Image (cartoon, rainbow over all chains, first blue to last red; front, side):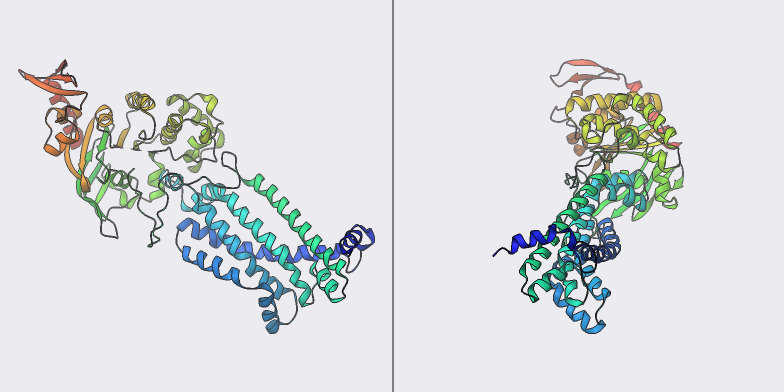
Length: 245
Length: 287
């Protein structure tokens, strides 16, 4: 019953880090899958989330996507896609993008939604264009939650990219699959430990990013709570006229 | 001069915020729009810089319909001060004040130098320049708000209940500051408040608004105090309840005797003075 010790010994053995099918190459592949998928998801979800957060229109899309898409089982979707496309990198990237979009979308949207309406109203009233409001007020003030969405997406994708092993790719998931198939459970534990460690490292890096990008004067990680004049959650969804206090 | 011509505002849900509003706001004077919640006073103010567009009628600045001016360009030449300052929390005091000059192409150094001057103008210690809004008191934040409103040296300054969220002592300071600034700068100030004392203190012209932006009375503070147009105005200015710090106690010849709330006479309001104020308002209105 010393699988765990075996796994640690395997990881600490420098010979297992170099060459083909080593820890090193699989770690790099795992990071490449994660990077490509999260990158594409950012390009899709962040602009959409910012647009919805800025205009306040289309909030139902956020609710629908964050609710329903999250319920899709990634492995099931991957096998389903592979049936049509065959094995390869892109089916994997597609399902990981689908996985990463909801937290990114929610982060970008809620980052903007949490900003005090009066701050934005004032920015408009002193003569900022909508683009200037977005880039100079909303994104700086919402960046904490936007990066928070990125952290959440990256964590999920790092953990889930293990499914790459099922469709002929490598990554840290190979250790899990091989360990289970060969009854070398210490290998499976190697995979589990490495994925968990990688997730922690990635998250710590992004925490650092979060601290760097949140401007001074704004509480870190969160945006200012809405004091007054918050957007009423009416069913119309239209921005309400500013009323007198 | 700012002119409201037969202005109405209806929201899509059918509520009428403003119904056929007409008024002339004279240049280089302080006009106070005063009314309780729902009187449409903020809506009227925001029509001047096109934060709200009327559904009927026109708002004119120096005879130019604002509907024909691109909103961003219009807003950049009108100062705007709001309740709770509306400062950008991620920018330092000096950068907040310099925001609009930077947008209109001033260099960073130029804009900052001007911002520091404005801090002097509004009575803020330059040592606060690098602070963030959350590190300032409410009164200091409002001063920064006023400095930002003055940053592009606008002819028009819109002030939307700027002092209603600060404590009474600070409010008194800030009101005196506005009076001092106005003596020095002679801006066309449009000031919105629900506080009738504030309105009488600051206004050269006071517009008392009832629901739906119906004009209950327009005039100088002296005129309104001396002769409330109707029961609504009398009630609003507290003349009936003796709530006013000063009220007209009696007439002596042509003069009005002013008494404090305990009934002690404190002075005379010479009629000729009251007339001269109203004449000025009328002239400015015609100009």
